Amino acid sequence: MSRLVLTLVGVAVCATAPAQGQRFDVRPEVAIEARLLPDDPQFDDQLTVSQLALILTGEISWRSKDRDTRVQFEPLVRLDAEDDERTYFDVREASISHEINRDWDLLIGVSQVFWGVAESRNVVDIINQFDTVEDVDEGEKLGQPMIRVSRRSDFGTVEAFYLPYFRERVFPGADGRLRTDPVIETDKARFERGGDEWAGDLALRYTNRFGGVDFGAHVFHGTSRNPRLDFNPSNGFLEPFYPELSQGGLDVQWTRGAWLLKGEAVIADMLGETLTSAVGGFEYTLFDVSGTGLDVGIIGEYLYDDRDQTNLPNTIFENDVFVGTRIALNDVQDTEFLAGAIIDDQTGGVFASAEFQRRMGDTLLLEIEARAFAAKDDPFIRSLEKDDHLLVRLTRYF
Image (cartoon, rainbow, N blue to C red; front, side, top):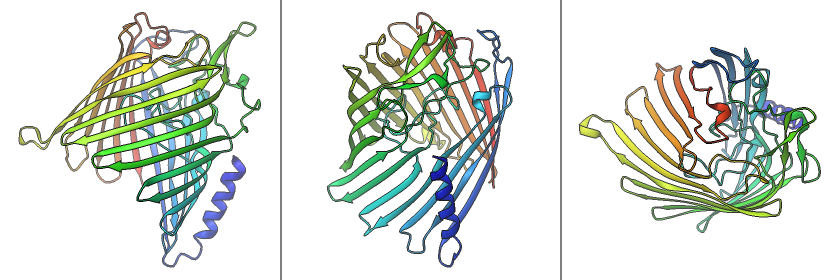
């Protein structure tokens, strides 16, 4: 992967040399982050009270004069004061894309792809590995090496993906918060397909819009992004095992006035078993409440997964209900607030979160995130129940 990144950066530098009529942008970002932890840690050697980090990222992009060719490079460096596993370098984007006759598009490099329509969880989102040391809600992704060919027509858009290299999931270390018990030993990862990360994945996706309905369908064959965690009694660690995965899925969103109706579903085959994952629900928005300019969204979703948790990779989203709200002030500072909770209707476990963001002038963004866990009888949340936290991040744009 490092060779690919260096090659793409070199191409970008060469391409930007004769810049007449071309567009070259450099947009660096620096963020300071503090995670405040009110509870004593649940396990020995875990950090206490606070966790500080410095984040360096940004985007370098170039577009040709005819706008047919685009180069993007987006690195990320996180320096964490406490958890070594949370100090890392990643390339979120390092790609070259070229448009042919306005209908065909070819992308080569490292990129990020998002599929799905639901708020609580996107069961169809399979291309990128999730960055679980960055956040626990599957909202951040690692860059994925890929070749993508897409074709646009009146009948919709078809995208074909070849993913030559698999990105392993990274987990918090023994001294970090939001970790499992026992600790996950990522160096001991095993793979069903080919025994390593170079087995190669394939995916095909179709999207279209029919009136007020956005429709997507996909098929995927490759390695599961979510590993099964096997306990090794000889060292006392959990070791990741990444099985082979074949799946097909649909995602649909219907927009009608203030209503959004959303649904995603996947049928997958893994380790000789067939499983179904789905999420569906609605979002209803009250626009300009009482003439204040305030928009308030009400969100409700149901999550379902029928996998055998003893043999397949675990999930906390078996039979859960998500309720939440989205509030937009529509002011010049783009102030937004999102809050919600996922509640397991069988175990009573709760994962609640709240997010606030507001621009401060033209170059600063303030973000505040809160996470809370209530395990009750939920075995997957039990290791996190002392990890309630408040995260404050201030980002400076240049």
